[in-house]
Amino acid sequence: MCGRILSNHFFRCFFALYCLTLFCFYSQDVPAQENPQRWFLISESELRSIEQYKQNSEMEKQSWLSQVRSLSLRAERSERDSMSLNSQLSRAREQNRSLEKSFYEYEQGKLILLSSKNGEIETLKQELADEKRKSNLRLFIIILCVLLNVIICFLLTFIFFKRK
Image (tube, rainbow, N blue to C red; front, side, top):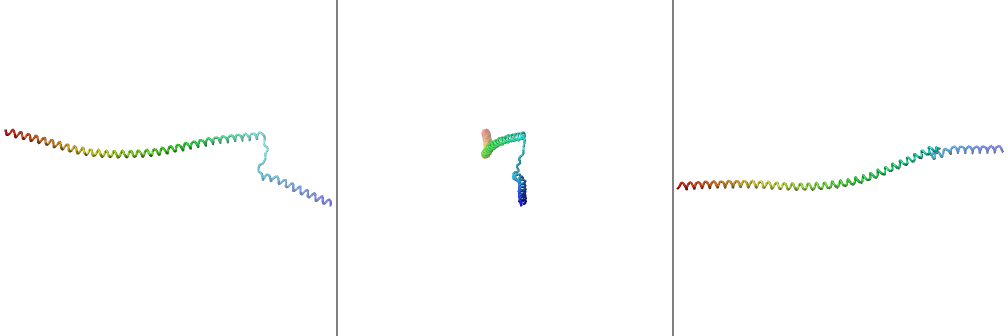
């Protein structure tokens, strides 16, 4: 019985050791599945080159950020200038429209004045033509009267001398 207890105890220990071995074997896989990061051994020169690469990357990142800030400021300044120029342009267009309107009103006034002056000129030309006709008629009548007077005077003198 003692041999059987020992053999039973041996199998139990062997079974426990077997289970522990299986547990240890599978427990190594579990952390690898849970945490995919793996640890590697690197040399000091590799560590320095990685740190230098990191510093260079950080400096490059800062340079890019500085350029972004600079370009952003330039873009804001350009946008302000553009807005200012757009407002100046709209004011200039509005002023141009008002000046064009004033010019057209002035031009209309001048055209109306010119047409009224042309009408006055035409009426004056007509009056002048009428006056010229009247004066020509008067001149003709005066010349006719003078001729008649001369004829009458000539006849009277002729009759006067003929009677004598």
